[in-house]
Image (cartoon, rainbow, N blue to C red; front, side, top):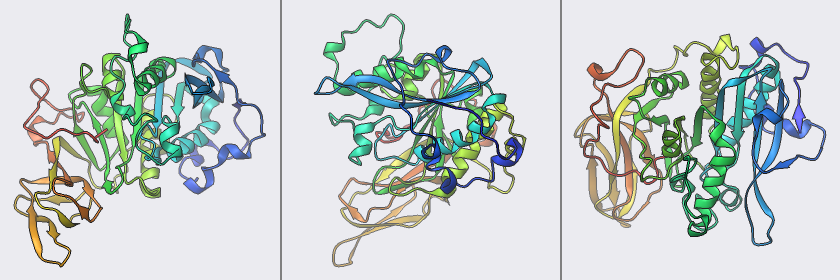
Length: 397
């Protein structure tokens, strides 16, 4: 199914003037036609100057029928070169990336005839998780820990020894995402937590740092993906020479329209700077926004007492060492613990669930990078992987 540019407002006036409410069901206004199913995305086989939608087969279900993912392709009149990938709902309960992608493609429908390059999007990667409002895949696995070895040339591992999630993730990458030169992987916080609008990536890379800055998030967190062990989509991209950033868009239980629009604006700015689209009104950073805080690393602070948790700072707030950031009381209201910030930092994310078992998370604390290691382009001058003593991040990307 392909759609061409509609008559309407000029590209310069389009991008800022459509709210998310205008575009959530954009394609529902199109004629109902059969959407094709293909075994893999081959960009060269699709028409230029159009937006195309398709189903791409990944694995098969217990009926022997193909399990497909929805794929959207905006292929410019001058294809080739840059291919930007957008993924959402890799964790099924993290849905804010879906309307973000829909909004991007609504704008691209007016710009595609003038595009240079392509934009490929999977608005929902984890169909099973989305339909059951679950973070996980059908076998209970975290899809974003299942990409180990995906896309590597000469990879001859026996699929019969791999789990459902591993086979799905490998095929998702091989059949759709391997075409991309850049991937922006859209996420939100998990249930019971809230995130700032923040970006995670390897900030030693100048190209990654520029993209992170163009997105203009509240916070950037430096983190090195490990292709040999962590199984994330970012790690698979790193192993395949593809720049990839994880973009976090607030909470998962509701659409945060402000953060969705900020993410949309940032992505359009990236497309503009990469030369994919011409969006002059989005080119410059929004100077009315507070400056982005770059963090050299981050970690979660955990409770040492169970009880009812109250976290004081908001996401995006700065805190200072010794500041009281949370309290825990028992069911009668007697104070069990006061939690203080162990060092100066910024609140990247926080728990919003008052029901707290000992060891639960309180605050995701980012440690701002000192000025002397920040280059003019936003990249960080770091030795090796710069791995200070931090806690692991099982739910970071």
